[in-house]
Amino acid sequence: MYRLDLPWLLLLLPLPLLVWWLLPARRETSASIRLPFFAEVAHAAGVQPSEGSVVTRRSWQQTIAEGTAWCLFVLALARPQFVEPPIEKQEPQRDILVALDLSQSMETKDFRAPDGTARARVGAVRSVVSDFVTKRTGDRIGLIAFGDAPYPLAPFTMDHALVETMISGLLPGLAGPRTSLGDSLGLAIRMFDKTTVPEKVMIVLTDGNDTASKMPPLKAAEIAKDKKIVIHTVGIGDPSATGEEKLDTTTLQKISSETGGRYFFGGDQSELAAIYDVLDQITPEDQKELSWRPRIELFHWPLAAAIVVLAGWYGFEGLVGLIRRRRIAV
Image 1 (tube, helix red, strand yellow):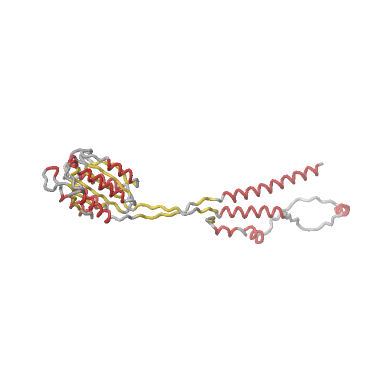
Image 2 (image 1 turned 135 degrees about the vertical axis):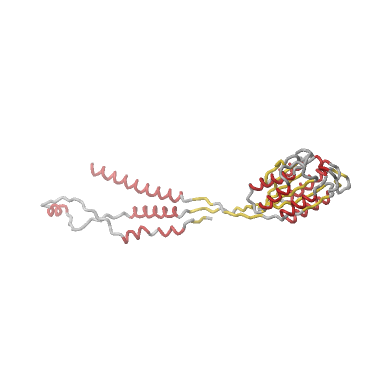
């Protein structure tokens, strides 16, 4: 639709009439010629002389041209616009960062699939996490893989197909044989520092204990808590194992409780899928709807029309005056 951005400026339309009514007319004294026989000259010319000033008057054509130009100029000042239909956009209010352990132990084939066959831990993780990402249509998703060190594989993005592609290509040992849980939390904190969303959630999945971090996991959890980052931890693997393959459930539980998250243990693929279903429920989609209507400025059209009207009128007046002067000279 068409609208005026500053409609109150239309009150300026009667301004020329107010000036004409309220302000006194401009007076100008001009030199005159004294003729001792002026009466005889006037009588011979058939003119009846009168006393007083000479008031020049506008022609009706000039009044119409200048009045039209003034109305167009005021209309331009009021900023006519064409307002287009509203455009709506949904803005995510939550960033979810998925951190996956890709140490060499993820190659262990002790995860029972729904059909009863044993499969590698990484295969079950790829399947379950991809399904989780597919469900989070309204959130930005980021991806970290960690082993000897953490590596950001995908920044926070709404391009979930990209994240799923990255997950499908994950291989055990890709990031090294060891586990750097604390450093992965530190990398996550730096990634969240660059976001402005009100909710920040991290989901960490690991099958071992921290053996390669420079930053202690619990210290990283304290920093994450101060920055209002909720960390959910998911443990898979064997808690009764020894060495690097032992699942450190105590540390994972402390990390989640410190940041307001929850700890889960997945013993097989079905349990792992159920865990991510729970995570999907406790982090419901939260989006902010933005709406705006694009505006196209149209003030230049009445402004150009006012200029054309004035230029046409004064050009015509000048041409008529020039023709008259030539006729008098002839």
